Length: 92
Image (cartoon, rainbow, N blue to C red; front, side, top):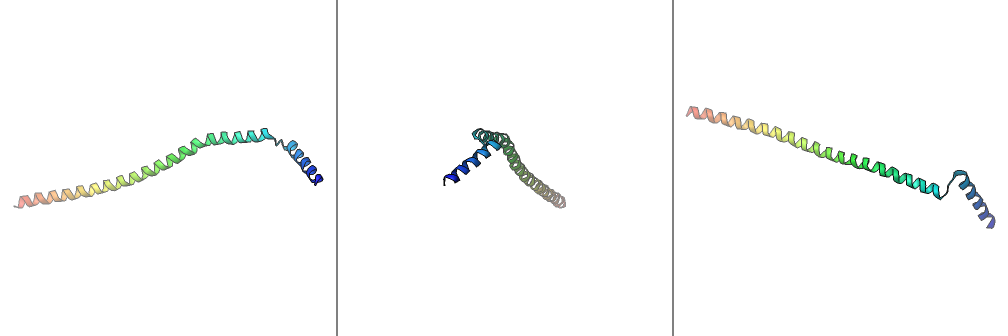
């Protein structure tokens, strides 16, 4: 058991010294990740907000065009009724 622990300690020392894996390295990586998230979060948030607003705008534009066509149809119907009334008034 003692040989196993000694071997593991030696491997741990080699990995730590060879790759520089110490507490400062992990803190640096953690700070780098936090900094990256802080930079990317506003961009992601704004992109999502733009997406949702553009969906709302597209929906409103579709409703607007539908209402515009309905308005044309109603105006046409009103013009037909006015014309019919004028023709009927002149006959009587």
